[in-house]
Length: 243
Ligand code: NAP
Image (tube, rainbow, N blue to C red; front, top):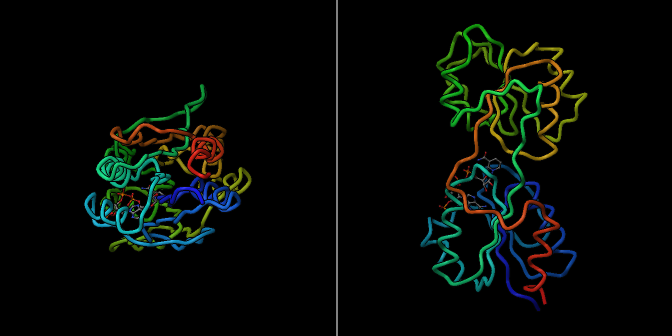
C-alpha cells in the first residue's frame, strides 16, 4: 500500500486528481471546506481543520504522509496554512494550481487587486456581469447606479437589493451559452477573478468578441509556488508515493 494522502479539494483539478488517484488504487482522503455540495471518488471529510494547528493535529491523528493542496488559486488562507502545517508535521507538500488566464491583444482588461477596487472603478450606469461567486458580491451592493447581473452556484445574499438579476447555475459554460447571455443583457463590463481554466474561460472569449471591459482581479500574491499546473503532471509527481 502506498502512502496516505490528504488531498485538499474544491476545484475541477482536485476532482480530476481524485479520479486518477482512485484509478491507481491510492490511499487518499479528499478534504472540502463545505461551501458547495460536491461528490468525489474515495473517502471525504468536510469542514475546516481549525487553522494550522488543527491541520497538524489531523495529519498526526489520521496518519497522513503526503499533503496535496489542490484548492482554488484564490483560497489563500488554506494554501498558506497547508504549507506551514506540512512543514511542521514533516510531510511533503505539493500544490496543484491551474495557470492564470493571459490577456490577448484585443482584450480590454483592467487589472485590479481586489473585488473592492473593481467595485469602485466601474463606470456609473454600466450593465455589469458579476462572475465572482456568491461570496464576492458584497463590495458591489452599495453601487445602486449599476445594473448588476450575478451568476453563481449558490444563492447569493443580495442584502436589500431586489433589483439584482441572479442566474444560479454551475459551469462549465460554452461560448454559445455566453453569447446568449451577452445577447440578453448587453453587458458593458464583466468582473471576474483570474481563476484560469477552460470551463470558465468562454466568457472571456465572448467579452473579447464584444469588446466588453473586463475587470480582472489578480491572484493573491502569497500563495505557495505550484508543483504542477494540471492533474496529470501532479499525478506524475505523486507516483513515487503510491508504491
Ligand atoms: P480560504 O479563504 O483559503 O479558506 C478559509 C478556510 O476554509 C480555511 O482556513 C479552512 O479552514 C477552510 N478550508 C478551505 N479549503 C478547505 C479544504 N479544502 N478542506 C478543509 N477546509 C478548508 O478559502 P475560500 O476562498 O473560503 O475557499 C473555500 C474552498 O472553496 C476552498 O477549498 C477552495 O478550493 C474552494 N473554492 C474557492 C474559490 C474562491 O474564489 N476563493 C472558488 C472556487 C472554489 P480552517 O482554517 O478552519 O482549516
